[in-house]
Image (cartoon, rainbow, N blue to C red; front, side, top):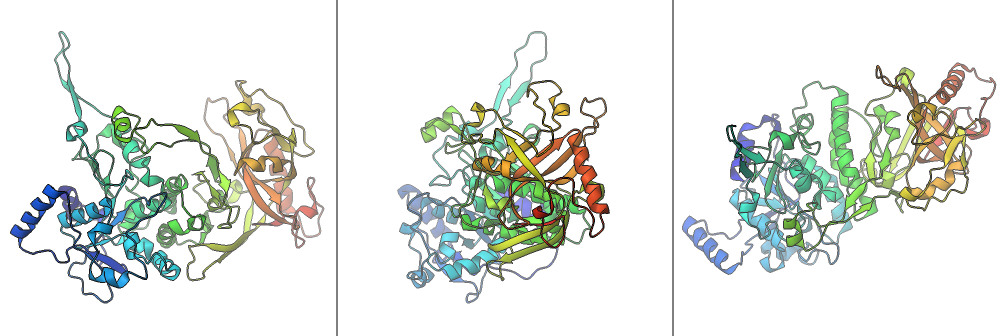
Length: 597
């Protein structure tokens, strides 16, 4: 632990700011060395007594940083999962704030808080920030104020301690021998014998990527912004910074076989340049937007306890990226990368519901349960937190849209206006009161066969309906036919944002957003035309729509979309209406313009 931290602080330029900055502190911190005897002999005697009794007195207090001269410019943070029921007894409230400024009794601190304090002392860091102890829990005004600075709290910390396994304790009872690499020696005949190390390719995924704590939405921001993290996984400590990843099993770094796993590298470049604050380099916008997509993919599979936090929990990261991208944040999307980023969708995948994702004998013995899985479904949030065209309006695993701004021949719509009205004008990256886009493009009414298709059936026990442009021929093809994609010309592949919305597709419209051509020499699909778009439903007001889901066409149908787009672009005011649809689909001001809310 000490070696990882010291090596990172001393030898990793990407993990340390290169620009001189004035020290920044959270509003409140916990002083973990309050009333500690400075005599090292006395400290050792106290530690031996504590180990023999199992009692670790906290000896700490709450401080207001604006009123307290800080002896040490460094502080740690703690990331942890709040209990599903009952909350946390160690809470800062209006009624106990003065008492906690004098002394925090260790009998109110859960084991993981006490252990985090011990880690801070072991690293010789005097201060630590813990959310429930540093934010007044029964004061909405204080919570809103602190939410604005949450990104800075983690970005300016020295190190983040993460209770990644989401257990009551950071370090559960364990057998240290089990974390050692498994080494086998060959005993072949007539061949030189060697020693081989058996490596678990899923090492990082099981302990970090799919851990219970990393399913908590707030953790994505905390993990991304912190310069370095000490994870406490279910069986060992794991290190993660912007330069290096290691573990007790691999103290010098992860083996190549583990590093090649797609789940590693969450904090590695190009994001290292983002929060190493080395921002004087000229970087391509696509590098940063790819980093944003990596955050979004991780955040999308996480969960918030309160729907109102859907955007708030990632506001700190969004604020950092807005400076780097020199871009405007539109309810989770970036203006300069529209319309491509409108093409997000929700991935229907498997999630495990066991306490941690290691289906091993050790896991079952420790937790007492076998892993089980369920299909994830997405749903619109019950409360309004974002417009329908934003991924923040749904819960579910997000698959981002195109990571580039569509322009010229690739784009099939034009953004005219983007209006975002935040709930609190001082929190532009937080909750939203209302939002809309004014777009210019072509809407095609859809039909569905059968129109009363039962969307509530399990996806593995139903035939998908045929969805097609109204007034156009449809083709039925067998899904198992070898070259079905080339023949799938009048049938749409639809991914609705929530299953219940399938029944609305027959009353909805298709909005082409982008076009492309599949290019792979020698492939049977080489040259296949593709059009990506949205399925939108009228709100009842002329020219106003909300999103239902993502839609893709392929094949000869794409010629129709291109032909009508050319007519729209070449039409003069007062010209004829489109061949499909009609003027009632659009805003009264001009055919081809409409509002998406």
